[in-house]
Length: 186
Image (cartoon, rainbow, N blue to C red; front, side, top):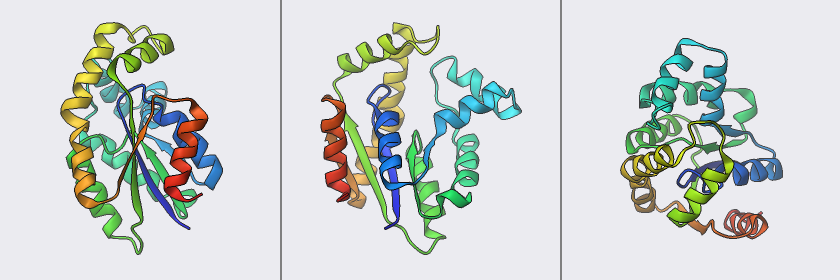
């Protein structure tokens, strides 16, 4: 079976953790745009420098930069039997780009998994995680506002397509994993 999966959910919802577990279970790559961008920043590439200026403020990296990275990554050999996207698409424009990209292939079995978590739980998780000195309350709140404005509309977008599956992400890790596997019939 080919899995083409997108994980949606606000920052701190557990998308990366659940995507990694699921990727290992079905042996497909977990493609995190955050990891791709952090790699570009760490390597100080021109794209990384551009992306860093946006990320430092808690803003989204422009669609064109991210879309080009994702297109290249989905064409790599390990993604032939499927993939899990984590952090892409983040806007309706990126979703439309992905739809166009997938329509060029022979199979489109896209499913969207949305992790729902209350805002205060997200804030607590992100404050505890503290990935960098930039993970302060003001930046976290800005990231959540940006998510509501730019990314939350994807829930409606994919719901209208009929491929959205929402899961309560405010539970134990194994409970969430079991719920996701049930959706995918694994």
